[in-house]
Image (cartoon, rainbow, N blue to C red; front, side, top):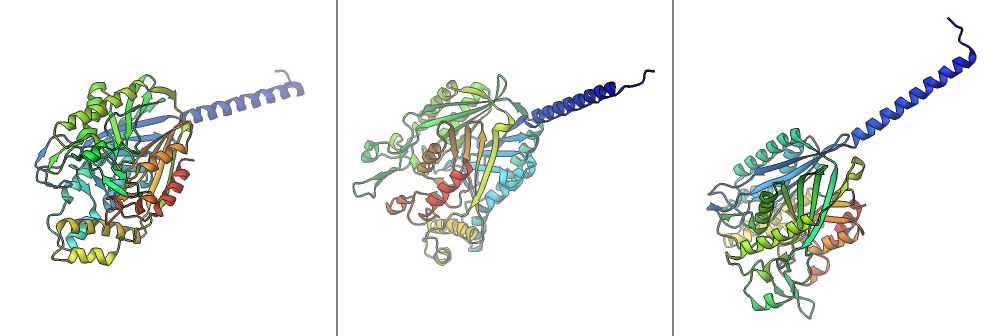
Length: 464
C-alpha cells in the first residue's frame, strides 16, 4: 500500500469536508421543503335542530333547509393547526363559544387561540350561549331559547367530523382570489338625517317607501372568493360578503337563508366544498331590495349566487408555500357600555311585569357583563395566505371596520369574517353611539364608544 503523503492527506480532508457540507445543505433543503408543506382538511357537519327545539325567534316547526357547520383545518408541518369554522346559527356567545373552541381545538390537535368560529346569523337558526341559559334558569324564566342537550350534541358531532377530517387532509400548493359585486342585495340600515341623527331604520325587510327610495348608503358591495388548490385541483372555496342574511323569518321554519342557499347551489354546481363567512354586516341588511315576501328569498339567493360564480370566474392563482402562511392573534378587552348595569338587568329578570322580550335582552347582556367583569377577553386574529388576509372579528360589527381593515393592506386582499364572539351584540363606531338608531341604544349593543379605538388598534396589530 502506498504511503499517504501530506498532499494526499490534505486532498482527502478537503473532499471529506466538501461531502459533509453537501450533505448538510441537502439535509437543510429537504428539511425546509418538508416544513413548508401545507395541508388542509375540509369538514362539513349537520347542525340542524330537530322540530320542537327552539331557534332564534320561535320553536322549530319545520326544516326548509338544513343547517351546517363548515370549515377548514390548515396544517403546517412544524406548527399547530388552525381551524376556521362557519356555522348556520344566529350567534355563538360566551361559554357557548368557549365550548365550541375547546372541542374543535381538541379534535384538530391544536389550541383554542388558533380556533376561529363564526355564526352566519340566520334568524331562523340556533342561538348558543350557555352563560345566558344558566342566567335564565337561575331566574326561572320560561320559554328559554336554548336546547342545551341539542347544542352539546351538535358541538360534539362537529368535533367528531373535524377529527375524522384531519386524517384525510389534502396538500395545498396554490391559492386563488377573485371578487365580484353583488347587485341589489346589501343596503345600510341606518339612514341619517340632516341633523346627523338616524332618521330611518331600514330593517331586513321593508315596505316603507322612504326606506326603499333612500340610497344604499355605505356598504361593501364586493363578494370575495378565496380558493385553495392542489396544483390544478381546487380543494375548497371560501367566500366573504357583508350583510344580514334575512329575507323573512320568525315562524320556526329552519333555513340557512338566501346566503346559505347560494353557497349550497355553488357547491352543487362545481362539486367543490364551499364555505361562506358573513362579513361586518351589523349595520347592513337587504332592506332596500327586500319586501319580506317568500318570493324574495330565491331572488336574493340568485343574486348572491351570481356574484359567487362571477368571483370564481375571476380567480387568479398564485403559488403558496409554508413561509407565506402566518397566524396572528391578540386578546383584547372590549369596553362595556354604560347601559350595561348589573342591578338594572337583574331587576328586569326578577320582575313579574317585565315582558319576555325584555327579560331575554337583560339575560343576554347580563351574560356578557358577567364574562367581561370576570376578565374574559375577545380573540382578534388573522390568517395570512400570501397576500390574502383572512381577518376574524367579534360581534355584529359595523361595516366601517371591514372597510378600514382593507385600507390597512394596500395592494393586498383583506377578507373579513365577523360574528365570532356574539356576546357583545352590535359593535358600532364611535360616532354611531351619538346618532341614535336601533343598534347603539338600549341593551342592543354591549360596548362603549371607545370600542372603535381599541378594535382598530387590534386589527392593525394582527394585519402586520
